Image 1: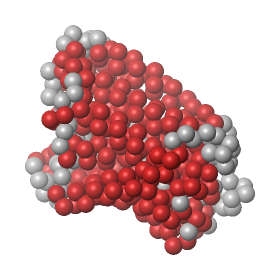
Image 2: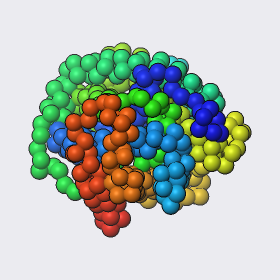
Image 3: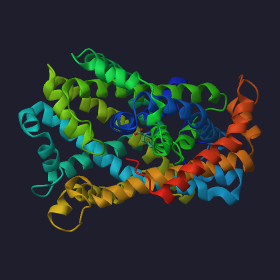
Length: 459
Ligand code: PHE
């Protein structure tokens, strides 16, 4: 895999689409999006989010796709080939991905922990959902089981990508359709619960007075995270795509699928939360402790809860593999390391950071190693990693990518690549050109500055 000539390629068009959608659809859609939609005003937030995805999300994704496919290289190699002064933009992306992956795999492990808990020990989960969650994280002693599941999740991620694109493609073509079916089933169940209409009307009622700067910036940050943008992952995936695939339609399909899943997850969780009268808190506990209250209150809740954690697990693993692939492709191609060894070394370091992340959730507080801001639920190290990536590094990666395409490489080159030199139609090309040059850098620049200056409370 070290030269362009013998690089792997996705086997089919649909395999690529499902893999890229698999990367995009993840914990961000199912675990983060519903809580944010609730906190930022329901319907109005949904509209803002849709506008942002349509304008900024699609254009940044197309920028990344075209850079990757043009060069058939990892994120750093791709930028270096287009202009060797800008390889660092790819490097920044790889670093961001690496940091995200360290905690992402831990949360993936928690989802596996909960699958088992719902099968074998649901009475204990439901007896006190918050205590159960904190107990898993070490509030009453070293969280060995959670850490072990984190390791299992990471090992699975590594195992899948040792087989390169073939492994990723195979996994995604099986798991993504299953995920869709599960999600739609759970959404219908939730929307037909007695009392669900209140939640539905909350999600459908548009009241723009609830929209402030924080809500808009939350939507922007969420869109990047959710669409896997700003860290070279989409570049890397597109680099495995053959030169005559249509990047215009691929961008539209992947963005649409990712956004549909986020909306479905919102319409799965919020109506259930209203129907059961549980306050939908945000942050790490939401997908675990809060939802336990919901599953507890609905008929067949044990089975539905178990399905939900399977869903979360599938969503997480098709994303974690994409990030690890991005980091691995960089090291193998740029530093000439051997693929399997590279994956192993990456995983060791990832796991060490991940362990610190999980330990900082509760165990370190208990041991007095880390002083938390407000009790057990707001661990400083975990906050720090998420703050650094979601609010700073991801937007920075996307910001520089659009500046690069808009002003250095040039949108015309990107458009030629997207359409395979005119083979495919791209009616909105003039709009793409304008957005990538002006709107994207300004809008994204605004999040970064506002995030730093006002220290906004995005969660
Ligand atoms: N998009 C994934 C999610 O929504 C997370 C992710 C971010 C994956 C960046 C890859 C790259 O959970």
